[in-house]
Every structure is written in structure tokens, then in C-alpha cells.
Amino acid sequence: MRKLYFLMFLFSSVVFAQENKDSNAVEVSFLRGNVLPHTTDLYHLQGHANGVMVSFLKQTHGADEWHSAFNFPDYGVYFQYQNYNNDFLGKVYAAGVLYNFYFLHRRLEFKLAQGIGYATNPYDRVTNSKNKAFGSTLMANTNIGLFYKKEHFIDNFGLQAGLLFTHFSNGRTKSPNSGINSFLVNLGVNYDFSKTKNRIIDTLVNKKKYVEPIKYNFVVRLGFNESPIIGSGQHVFYHMSFFVDKRFNRKSALQMGTELFLTNYFKDFIKFKANAYPELNIDPNTDYKRVGVFAGYELFVNKISLEAQLGYYIYQPFKNDISIYDRVGFKYYITPKIFTSFSVKTHFFLAEALECGVGVRL
Image (tube, rainbow, N blue to C red; front, side, top):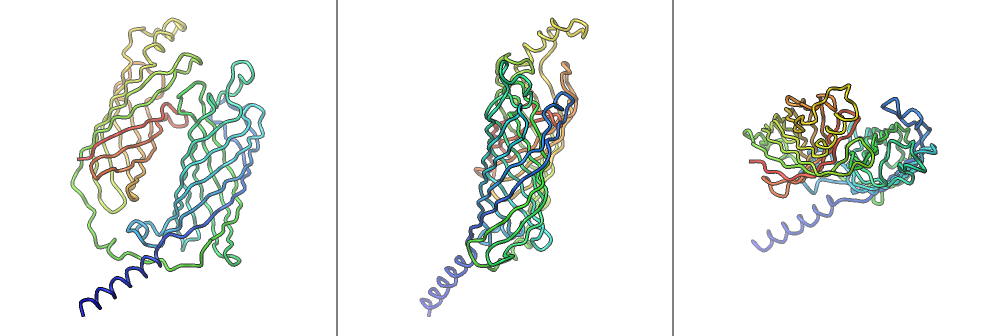
């Protein structure tokens, strides 16, 4: 009898795993829209951009707990081509990873994609001096989209239509780097390589308690960047943060903390500004360090979480930027207490740093 029970359990486990395993799909979207210059010195870079975005997707069906918790999202990789139809900007190619989250009975799709881009026509002092947006060929690429989606419109073929926001920037790893944004209309088709499958809701998600006591976090972020003076050279920066967070449900935690910014290119840049612009009355010995306080939000998905923070400099002797800054990025939890991170620190639309970090959460 025990053997019979064991065989029944094994059979049911195999069937459940087969029913809930991820399936494959592909999306092809055609893009058309406008460049959105965010500073007056970028108006000459306007154009009617067009392109295509191809996404290869894994569709979730409940094999893991987070599938049900997030209404069975897709995850996968994408390839993007975009022609700015502007002689100075040229074309860009990008590839990276993505999530598709669904709402309104899976008719509304929210796409979040992050990857690496390649520009065909970056800034060059002699041949392309007016491209102040791309200071290098390699850049970070971010895509945020909202679409109406109809799967299996005709057999395994479906349709999607909506809006896509794209951003390309090298995070001031090399100057110039104003970055460029585009707002695009998206029309496309999708194809599901499998038949419609049942999505199994994990009833334990609502029963398990995810509320945690206050956690203490320490993060060291580093990278390299360059001052706005073209050709001034790249310097390593160190951003050190201490903050507390409070997780109050399966998905969300709130943060509050402080951080120290050691931006080494400031040392030479302060002296340059003091000598080149005496009317600004800048002391060449001005302290280059900055201290900020911030509040943030963290969205826990699986081992990956998404993070957004808004901060204010309470100590900023050299006021080269506005006093408000923000950061967006993601974390990967190696263990529940140790994580790595990648983020972009900006002053609203003006990027300052691409940050790679490591931290602990105790």
C-alpha cells in the first residue's frame, strides 16, 4: 500500500510539473515615434524614430511561487533596432532581459526591459561634434512599455498595440552624455509555441506571512565616470549607503537611509571651474564629497528585486548639480543576506553614474 501511495504521489508530481512548466513565445513589435529632447541643447537631435523590437519569452504557469504572486508574468530576452532618422544620432542596437507583467485579465501588458546598447554614430570631435547625447558606442538601454495584448487571436497568433518609452545613455562613463529618450507607438504580433495551458494559482501565497522586522543594509557601489569636460579622463567613484528597510507584504518594502558620495573626478573639475570661471567665486579647495538622505521602495520578485530611490543632498559644498537625485536599478540576492546590484543614479533626466554594487541585509 505504501508503494502504491508513493507511485501515485510520484505520478501526480510529474503531471503537475508538466502542466506548469514554462512555455515559449515570441513578440515582434514595429516602432514609430519621436525623439524627446530634455534640454535645449538637444533640440537639433529631434527626429521621427522608427525600429523593431523582438522579444523571446518564457511564459510562466505556476511552477514557482512567484509566478502566481505576480499573475504569471513572462520573462526573457529582447533585441531592439532603432533608427533615429537624424544624421547626428544615427542608429542604435540593443539586447537585454525583460519582464512582462499582466493586468485586467491579461489584456494589459506592462513591459520592463534593461540591456546594453550600441550606437553607430557616437560623438566625435571632428566628424560628429553635435552628437552630445552619445559619448561612446556602448550604452545602457531601458525600455518601459504599456500595451493592449490579445493572445491566440488566430490560432497561436496574437496581437499587441501600445506605447513604448526608450532611453539610451552611458551614465556619464564618458563625456558628452546627455542621453536620449524616445516615445514610440508599438504595433506587433505574438506567437505562442504551445497550446493554451492552465495556470495554477498557489494558494499558499496569500497564507504565508512575509512581514519582517526592520532590516539593516550596507551597500558599496562603484564604477567610473567623467566630468562634463570632454576628454578630461575617467575616474573611479565610490558610493556607500546605509539604510533600513521594512518589508510589509510579499512584494514590497520601504527604505530610508543615508549615503556618502566620493566622486573623484570632482577633485580636478572643481579646480578647473575655479580657474576657468573666476566670476563664480569657487574655492579650488572646496570639498568634493557629498552626503545624501533618501527614501526608497523595493519590489521583490524572486531572487531579483527592483529598486527605486529619491534622495536629497544635505552636504554638497560643490553645487554642480541640483540637490535632488534619484536611483533606479535591480538587485540579485545571492543569499537572503547578501546581494549584488546594478543601478543608474541621475539628477532626473541627467545621468551621473552607472553603479555596480554589493551589499548585506541583516
